[in-house]
Structures are given as structure tokens and as C-alpha cells.
Image (cartoon, rainbow, N blue to C red; front, side):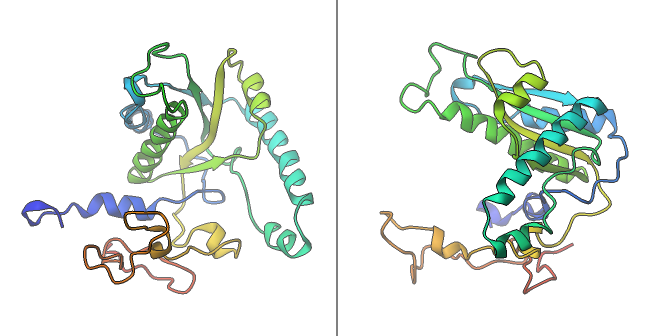
Length: 244
């Protein structure tokens, strides 16, 4: 609860309702106003030195999306061949993209020259420009979820292929292909957990106190237990504790 006793549960609801969507796209078009709001939310993300190093290429063209999907399918097979037999069995049930089922693809790219050469805050850690793009993606994803629009991040591709497919200039790096569109529903439990690929670990194992080699067990200054609106469903707890 924030100062003054007020907490806005809506933002927590969106965060915990967000899903990496694959099968649930219904193919309906996105209202232009909704798409504009989602992109404005992405463009409102914080960026190092106010460099705003992102671009958003909206891909509606069916032929381009089909070419990209064919490439993704081939990369899926490369990954599949690297797996042991038991993981192959699980992976067989995992859908990794909704490229043609979604309404459009949004290719998010990074322009490291924007604001250069003196990007405030990037002189010591060059990757903070890339982190800025990831923040824009998260903004987009949360805004889409709030609008009832699904987003699925596809990462089974070679950067040079996507850059060439979309005629990106030299020096522009593709960071994500996002499948975007209206959905029939959002799954309660994330796909990879529900399908048995990986389970979500308890937060306490990821929080350290003062130094990395410490733990927070028994420290009274924080409470890591889920509350009514910060609970994430799991395969062992199919109904959320969140308020609906």
C-alpha cells in the first residue's frame, strides 16, 4: 500500500494477466485508435539520455509474414534437434508463434546511433540503449493487455534474416517480432508452465540483501508473500487469488 493508504490495483491486474500469446489470436483487426494508444504507450518508455532508440515496423502484409514464419519454423527445427528425447517430447506440444493467426506483426528494432555520439548515461554501459528498447516493448505489452489485445514475442529467428526481410538499414538491429491482435481469452497459467517446460520459481530465491551472496530469509523489512492482487496462478493453483 502506498503513502496515504492508496494502491492502484489495476496496474497489478494488468501485469499478472499479461501472457505470451500463441494460440488465442482470433484474427480480427485491431481498432486503429487502440493500436495508436498501444504504440504511444511504447513510445512513452524511459530511455537512456532520452535517446528513444526504438522503431516499430508494422507488418500487415501476408506474404512478408509467411516468409518470416517459414524462417521461424526452420529455426524451431534446429532447436528441436539440439534437445534430448524427453525435452523433445515436451517441446512438441509448445507452439512458439502466432505469426499468421495474429492481426499483424510489430518488429521492434534498436538504433544505437540515435542521439549519438554523446548519449547521456551510455558512455560506460553501451547496452543500456538496448535495455531502453526492452522497456518500450514491456510498455507496449502491458498497454495491449489492458486493451484486451494479445502479444506474443517470437525469438526463433536470425537477426540478419529479419533485417533483410524488412529492408532495415545498416546498423539497425531487430530486437523482437511481436505477434499482436485480439484474442479469444488470456490463459490463466502461462503456456510454458502449463505445458511442463519450466515451473515458476519462488521469488525469495531471487532477492538478495546488501550483497549477492546473502538471502532475505527472516528479514522483517519486506514481505514477499503474494497478496490478493499480486498472486500469479500456477498449475498447482489454477484459480488466481487476484480480484476480478
